[in-house]
Length: 241
Image 1 (cartoon, rainbow, N blue to C red):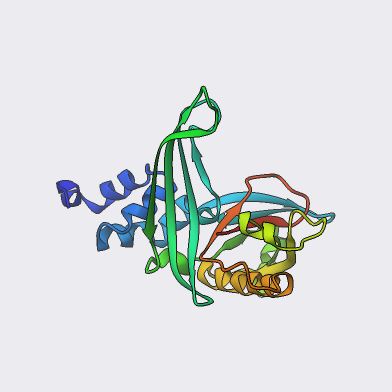
Image 2: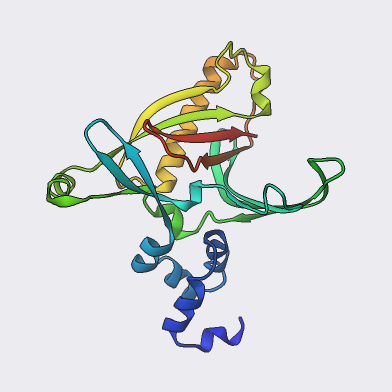
């Protein structure tokens, strides 16, 4: 570890706050002090969540959703040097065994668009990270009326789950190309690890219904929340690898 750790904790905290979210995830694995800083309560709520707005006929709702579920793009669209960072879990013998951050960097050939000249893919395991125990989302109350309601009853976030992936081309899906498998509500306070476990059970049930000959054997799931405005459920895409 460099001499940066000799600086006062306040200064280290300020330096770490300038890191992009996924680089914070990597930094939290460097030492116990940085893990404590990056998973502390104040740091969590200033750096870890992204605000989403959901519309209902009654009112507008503001939600904090954990950044781990949003894929991160750098240089996409007009820049040959690109980077994509995603949240994955590994599947073995029908159960989740690992949680990972996949950092995919590549260079595009502009003469043959979408041809990758050089590609580096790094998977970092975060199975022991305290971030997995953080809430998937939190409700932001506004006004005394909302504050009174949320003090006694947890907010329920509508979530639409959609699966996709090349492996699904072997299944008889009919016209349902989006493979929408569930509309559900997620209760405030559920952790990332708990939610991923429940989603894997839903994917398993979907495959049992559609994959009658057992051709699809998932080894990984990639989770992506689309950064979009919506007047319906928040849409979560699960890629089956």
